[in-house]
Image (tube, rainbow, N blue to C red):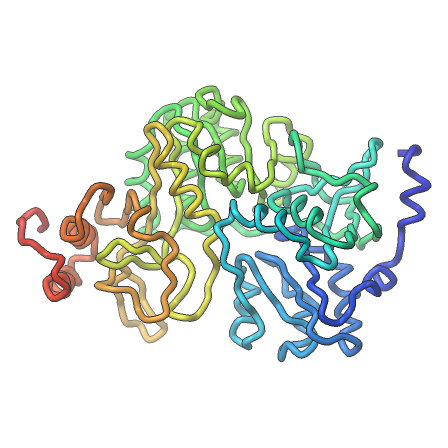
Length: 447
């Protein structure tokens, strides 16, 4: 630490001084998740009236950004996101949120091809004796952001957990232009969502698809949490973890003795992840824990790296699916909800994995605000709906009514399989629509 103390002090500024480097028209990139820098965001919001059309770019903000909240019309700050959170969707309804589509693993590649960012701002752990600031639970795209930015500001938080890793999980002081001492807030947590009975039914069906030695990827939400709890209570052995997001479910499975990682071909014996979101207990669990190692998204989500491990089971949610097996996981019509994230990355990688399965799970119905029940399995997706997983990539699909595998099936076979796991009240209507669209043959295999 003493070796870099002079350089540290020479770069140390207040948040208010640091944000003065931002000019009108700049693209300012925050890190994502708990990597969003709160003191810098607040300081930049106080310069609102001096600036015009500054782009604030991030993903999965865990609190309403001060910059964007202070300027709902988007005159001074334009909000762009790689993946929306609950808070982000509030800004979307006001018209000042613009989504940037990416396959997650491709995003660092694009950043590396051009210096597209004017200022990068990241929330980091304190500098260690070798002059490095750790990215904590938000490694994902942190280093590519730094490499693509003309100026780099880090906001130091004494409460940031330190993650283990082999590369690109930290930044050296020599790569940083300005250092800010933040207010040291606690890491923002996500309460564990309690699964509904339908989630538990689907989770039980997913469990039948998991073998000893499988390598697990869980997405966010009630369903993955339900699966994690069932795995923890099961007698499954020697599971591995190679996942985009590390959640409480992984910690629960590990503490129950289900995870050893001994069957993995790469990163054997450790749980690897790109970012972690969950409880304070989860952040304490990953802090300096060599069993948990964080790598950049370009490594974790690269389909060929995923595929190196045998029996990869990728489990993710969807909003709806049509009879052509096109899967929507990110919008309601044209209204943006979340993002593509790593869903396609893990669908590709799991299929290439020996014995792997890419599983999309969803309840067969949902109830709207007026109390009307709708089928999530639709004849076609509504106009403007985003196709997250194209039919060419779709693999396993699970509702509370069963499990289907659509790989190698024709359009009529897919339609029949999907109708077989739809809610019984909607099956006749779906058959009629399949007939109308020319993708139905009466094979008498559905009840």
